[in-house]
Amino acid sequence: MAAWSDTLLSRIDDAGLNASAPPQQLWIDGWLVRFSPGKAKRARCIHAVAAGRLPVDERLALCAAVFRDAGLPLFVRITPFSQPSGLDGLLAARGMHRIDDTRVMVSTAGPVDAEPLPPGYAMERLALAAFAEQVGALRGSTAAQRTAHAERLNQSPVPYEGWVLRRREDGRVAACGQIATEAELVGLYDVFTDPAQRGQGLARLLCTNLLAMARARGASVAYLQVDAGNAAARAVYRRLGFADAYAYHYRSPEPDAH
Image 1 (cartoon, rainbow, N blue to C red):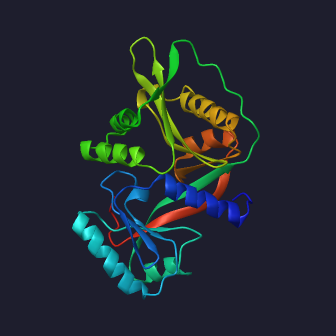
Image 2 (tube, rainbow, N blue to C red):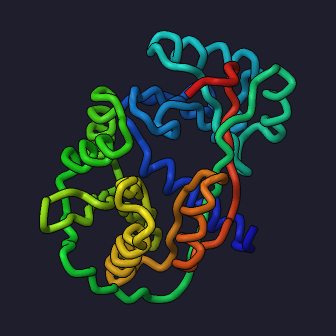
């Protein structure tokens, strides 16, 4: 892991929380409980933000009722900042399974130059609902998940911009991605390439131009979240100047929950 201050990394984690805020959330004794029906786990899990006063088992029982009523599986997101201290071990001792190893990658590189697009491609900004529909179609998300994604983006406390790289000849979207900006922090989200268009460097090109756009407006720290096992994506991000900053994962009572 690269070395950045705990203060900066904590701010980045807060920015990620702000950028993934759904309307379906509440606080339970210092834990932020989110229960969106969308695809992103960050919007449908427990974020253990503060130590609280209740015993962990009592808090878990209160949270479990929320997820049960929402018809969703229970997940607890575990980060270096989770509270109370030692929560991961407490949940493991209660038989909760570890899933979805994720890396937060950060770049504090200087200004990024935009790159020209290859012939036959154009960058296009989409309305947020249209972007949610487009990335959902590429990912194979359900209609309910796409609707929840659009709702979350439209009500986000952090401004999003959704962009696609479109082929001129047939109008097909080759790649998509979003930026969410908060003060000097910019997050890359929903970066996805059409499987039929992979291997051409299109995701790297799109991300380069999104970062150039954000940094021209004053963003100086970029961050993203990526599956630890996604070697291809992580290689792309390293070439863009990103490095691993910290890791997080989830705990769930069910080993195969999604």
